[in-house]
Image (cartoon, rainbow, N blue to C red; front, side, top):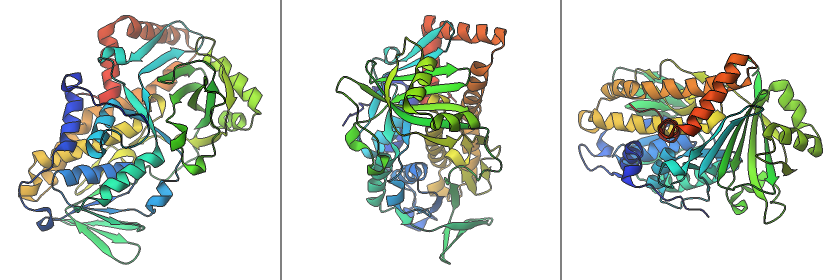
Length: 426
């Protein structure tokens, strides 16, 4: 088990603000039993974190989810956590709440071009820029914490059929005929249904390398699409349904690959024989990164991006993937969702909702508080794949120059790394 130590207060004012919010337990204003609860729709990590942050500040909540917790704990996904997200989770759950693999550096390069950079711990006193964690492990840890919170009422498995809003509250109709009433509703359900067939998919596979650093993440831009390699936590923590092979030798480095490709190309590569796909990955990575020696089971999933223009609709607020789904390049989607949770709870506190009882002023504050982060980070993750997949000569020169500038100018590199770790300043 890897424990990720929290940074010192000087490491980042943004990170300190995030963790301070999670640590504080409020004893002010009306008791939560006397105020209308907040109804949270969605019991995945974003919904669970939101409920815990609210409870720490004295807000009661009712969490509704159609899935039993055991079903979520069979999910095999690997999540990339930024430093800011780690601070929030550690403050809520403790410093060693689950097995994690630290990310000390992120190597960024473009296939066939000059210019590369390393974003990492050297800019922040040696602290890891983030970590990876299995989705199942995170849900289990959050589920244990929520079960110990008297201010959180869990309603599983219950499906929300509709949300009816009035001047002074919300009423959520559930599939068992009951209703949940509250001061506001938080939509943390995830991405909306697909309206059309996605044009791009992500090809997932586990790889072994003879050499390499187990604390490095790789972001390799190819003309076919960005290829990311992430360190994985201790094999002992892998969910039993993962069916993934253990590393082939004690000197090998085990990593998880996410390669974003056109839909047809992703499907065809998924069906390649191992040797053919290994050669394809090796060509994309190039000799400096190294060639994989073994590849595990492959899968593909659709890349769906969206961004709501209105994240607040009277007393309904959208968080995480319900508000925006990002391209997986740079691994920012989940971290943006955690910052949504923090921003909402901060806004409720600033508007003194426990004392005044009406969250509408808080939602105005929330909309303003999240505007810049929700503009910059989605724009960045949307633009990077297009810029680096283009073969237009001026763009090729520009992207090589940008990588070279990041590598040679410390202040530029530090601020870009800070954006990935803590989001846009406000």
